[in-house]
Length: 465
Ligand code: FAD
Ligand code: NAD
Image (tube, rainbow, N blue to C red):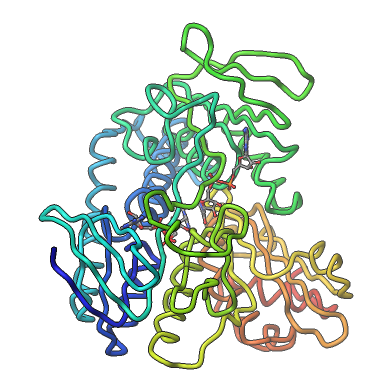
């Protein structure tokens, strides 16, 4: 058995783990990264990147279909489009491969040693890795757990055959004729929308009263309208009971208590993700848990000295950029720098059609926190750039403290608003007041002007509405 001694070992090479390892390497720490699968984790291989590639294919296909059906108001027509789905999947896989190689190169540049295999704790300072060439023991001063998450399986719908997880949905060989999505959250609606645009007959079965229950209903109302326009049937307050006797669909208990069957070539189960901790040897440690997740403090420290946890294994929000920010911070802490989790917001984006962005507090959340607020909302219907992109639906909404005008939340719904999220996060993180945003020249014609106008509106003097 080979033995490696290092200053920092990171278990898991997803966005949390690889960012942590790169930053630690940059800071001169002798760093080892253990990954049992592919570098980049869920996000790069079966999550953020491949799903956005598929969403892009679906958007392009829908545009061509609209043009072929003579539905564009700007006079564009096209022949009926054809989709080579295998090529679309190959294109998506090519992007993933390029990014895998990119992460490996960045790790090498930072002088991080990569060990390929499954890691298990022997004790708080010792990890045993089963590699293809035998076991390796790694002894480290600091250990970072970044083992991520995996799809939750429903007992009534175990994965296999027609029942697929997001990973299966991103590597299908053909577009299913009918797709039932169980769970109308992030993944269900992002992928459900994409498959509807690609031609699937899509139904969504959601247990709660609303889809995307994490977002406020003002924002999600636009999504609900679009789902309906795409012909997606949404059953809220519904329960997935299991496959039909013939195995060709899903039995559902609808909100009214009636049972019905939905035809399904594929059943995509997207009811959340659970932390990955199996065979990690956690029984050798005494870690405090937070429900199913590892409990962490403001330095991402666990209840055991020298052991940190970052990313999805520490719970919600399970977002790649949170994992990366935690990873960067923990590397600096391991190198002795004074850091703590002091972020004011973690922006969240739902890449539906239209997209939703939320940074900081919504009006309801601010009121519930006892803050007196003023809100400014500016519609894209009054934004020239949105009109020239044929994307007038939606708005930007700013939430500010009434006493000192400090911006504590910004939300938007609309086509392409994901790219505005950086401006939202920056404003909140920098402690901007409404006057800062109103006083910043926003280039014309851009969707970003809606942020400035929303600030003007909150100050009581919008120009363009
Ligand atoms: P992961 O990315 O899960 O990486 C953990 C790594 O640890 C894996 O590579 C795994 O192989 C490895 N590992 C686990 N156990 C061991 C072990 N014992 N030994 C060695 N290696 C181990 N987030 C966004 O912010 N934006 C999005 O648009 C977005 N879209 C998504 C779409 C889908 C379909 C899915 C499934 C997720 C999406 N997410 C998105 C969520 C995002 O993927 C996760 O939040 C992110 O990947 C978490 O990073 P992580 O480093 O904590 O864990
Ligand atoms: P989610 O938590 O977003 O949605 C799960 C949905 O399933 C919820 O609406 C929930 O009410 C519903 N549900 C739960 N049990 C159910 C049942 N038995 N029957 C019917 N509905 C049920 O989870 P997800 O969509 O699986 O995504 C997992 C994680 O991945 C999310 O927490 C998110 O952080 C991350 N993610 C992020 C993005 C993004 O940032 N754009 C995209 C995809 C995934």
